[in-house]
View 1 (cartoon, chains in turn blue, cyan):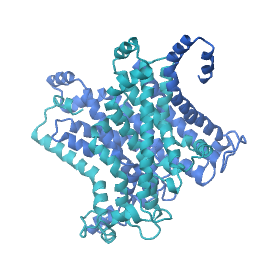
View 2 (tube, helix red, strand yellow):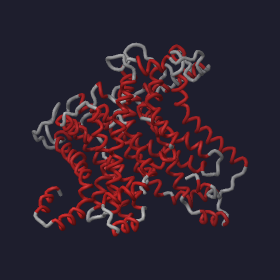
View 3 (spheres, helix red, strand yellow):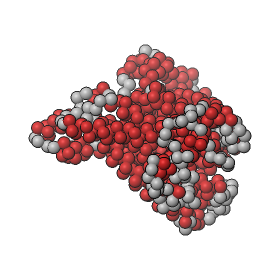
View 4 (cartoon, chains in turn blue, brown):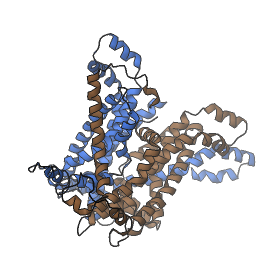
Length: 304
Length: 294
C-alpha cells in the first residue's frame, strides 16, 4: 500500500488530489492494519516458528521439527494443565450458563428493584481477576477463612481445605471464576429474554401451556444466539485463564492447578524452555481459533 | 434494557411463587456481596481479629491503619513504598492507552462503514480475530520488539502494547455503531464538497458520544485490570497496580498482613468499581457489544 505513494507525483496535480481523496480512507486505516499484521499475525507466525526451534533462554533458530511438541506432550505438568483446563472449562461454562439463565429468568418476572439486583450481580465483572483471586484466596484459606469462621461459630469439626488439597484446588478456581462471570452471563440471557416476542408466549399461554413448558419449549429454544455468544465468550476466557490462577493458587499446591496459560509462562520465562513454551502457546492458539474463527465468520456473513 | 421490561412478563406468578423468587434472588445477592463484604470489613480491623477466626464479624476495633499501610508504607518487593507509586503508574499507562485506542477505533470504524472498499470485511475480520488471540502467543516476540524499541520495562512500552491489542475492540465498537448511522447524511455532505476529515469531525464525531463512552469504559477496565502484560513487560519502576498488588500478597515473607492485602485489593478495584457504579449502563452495553456483536 505504501509503495504507491511515489506514483502520484508523476501524474498531474488534479488527478493527484483525486487519487489522494480516493486513497485517504485506506491510508487512515493502514497504520492500524499494519500494526495488527505485524504485532498480531506476524508475531503469531514467529511464535509458531519458534515452536519448531531449539530456543531455550533466548530465541534460537536451530530447526528441531516436532521435537518440542513430542516433549510437550510427555511432560506431566502439561497433561495436568490440559486435564485442568477441560475440568475447569466444562464446569465454568455449564455452571455460568445454568446460573446465568436461572437468574435471568427469575429477574425477568417483573421483580422490584430489578436494576439494583442486576447491579449487584454484575459488579464482579468490573474487578481485576487479581482482586477476585485475593478475596477468594483468603476467604477459602482454612487458617483464617470459611473453615475458621464456621469453627468459631461452634461447628468444631467443619473442614474445608479444598484450596490446599491437590485434588480439589481446581474447583476453588471454578468457584471464584463463576462468581466473577456468572452475573455477566445473566445479563446476556436477560437481554436475550427481552428480545423474545411476547405474542408467541401469550398465545402459548392461552393454549394452556404451563410456565415450565413455556420456558422449556418456547423461550429457551429462542435463546440459542445468547447461548452461542455465552459459550464463545466463556470458552475463550477459560482457555486464556491466567491472572486468577496466579492470584488464587499460584498454580499450586505444587502443579495441581496448572493451566496451559500458566504452563506457557513458567516454561518460557522461568524454566527457559522457550521452544516448549512456544509450542504450548501454539496449542492454545489453535484451540481458540477452532472456536472463534467459525463464530466470527458466521457473524460477518450474517451482517451482509 | 430497563425500559423494555415493563410489558415483558406474561407468566402469572402467585404469592408463593413470588416469595420463592425473591428469596432466591436475595440469596444470590448475598453470594455476590460476600467477598466484597469480607474485603471491606477486614481492611478495617487489626490483624489479630482476622487470625483469631473473626473474618466474618464486624471489627471490634475500627482502624484505618491497614489502608495507610497499603497505600504508602507496605513492603512491595524490595522497598517499603506502599502501592501509591504503582497506582500512579497505572494511571499514567491507562490514560494515553485508552485515548489513543479510542481515537484509532473511531477512525477505523468510520472508514470501515462509510468509505467501504473491496476487502473491507476481511480487514475487519483480521482486526476482530486479533481481539481474541491468547496473548501468550505474542509474549515472546513482543518482549524482543520492546527491547529493540528501547521501551522494555517502561510505561510508554506498556502503553504501546495496550494500544496495539486494544485497537481491535475499539474498532469493533465504532464500526457496529457507525453502521447504524445514516449513510445518506455522509453522502449529502460529500456532494456539498466536504472532505474525509471534515465529515468525520463535523458529522460523525458529534454523534459518537454514547459509543465513545462505551469504548472508553471497556478499554479503561481492561487495561487497568490487565495483569499478563504488566507482569511480562514492566520493571519494578513501571509496574502497574495489579502486578504490585499481587507481589504484595504473594511475597510477604514475615507475617501475612491480611488486612493490608484486603485494603490493597480494594484500592486496585476502586477505579473500575467507580466507573461501573457511575456508568453501569454503558459498562454493560460495552460488555455485551464485546461478545454479542451488534
